[in-house]
Amino acid sequence: MKLWAISDLHIGVMQNREALRDLSSFPEDWLILAGDVCESIDDLAQAFAWCVKKFARVIWVPGNHELWLVDAGDKSRTSQSKYIDLINLARSFGVLTPEDPWEFFPKTGHLIVPLTTMYDYSFRPDHISREEVISWAAEQDCVCSDEILIKTQTPAGVDRWSAQLCDQAEQRFQKELPEGVQTILINHFPLREDLVHIPRVPRFSPWCGTKRTNDWHIRYRASVVISGHLHVRRTDWRDGTRFEEVSLGYPRQWDPAKGLQYYLRDVSP
Image 1 (cartoon, rainbow, N blue to C red):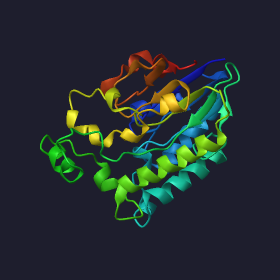
Image 2 (image 1 turned 180 degrees about the vertical axis):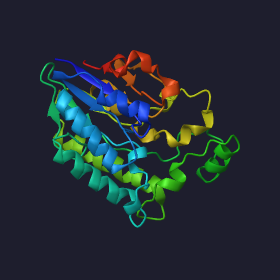
Image 3 (image 1 turned 135 degrees about the vertical axis):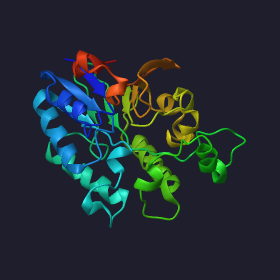
Image 4 (image 1 turned 90 degrees about the vertical axis):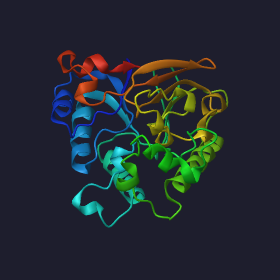
């Protein structure tokens, strides 16, 4: 029994979509989808339908692409309301979400904790203020499409939403994390700024997480932390915790000849 993880499948791209469709079955194993499966709700439903047939258990956390308002019915609502719809969609397929009770991975006894956090532009140089950060990124054409395609409920924007999500997660940890139990934390965005390795687009970092989660792997006894978003597959270690970036990415960033199975990451503790 293995715990596999992958993110950034981007199945709106046909080559990626066909790779997921043709993936072999792993009937005894669990699968983590760490965000950016696609933008469309219909595409996400198809991805869930395929995955629940191939794996014994599927866990999903949203990425920023899932929260983009791109469908015809999205224009009059917010990314928060779309998030609720996505949670309900996942539950209809029996997929574990960040809004559900946490589950133990049977093989090791680690508590699987799916998270939803966003970003608050704090992954930026110290001399750049919050008010300056978007124009600073724009100097190198690094402004994220989220600035157009994510719409929040309050004028405070993603900053405030990120703070609310972190508040909610910390409250759950305080109430629901059993004493002494080790965890597997799953989030689309990296939990630490020093894990953001994107030398080709260094000024994209403000859209990559929040410093507030920097020590969550210590505070919440993580053996493994899974994330995506960066399209830079790698393994890092911090304070004895293994950090796995499990992105697939667009076809230019992986070798379709190897098939999707090659890019599944075994993240079992």
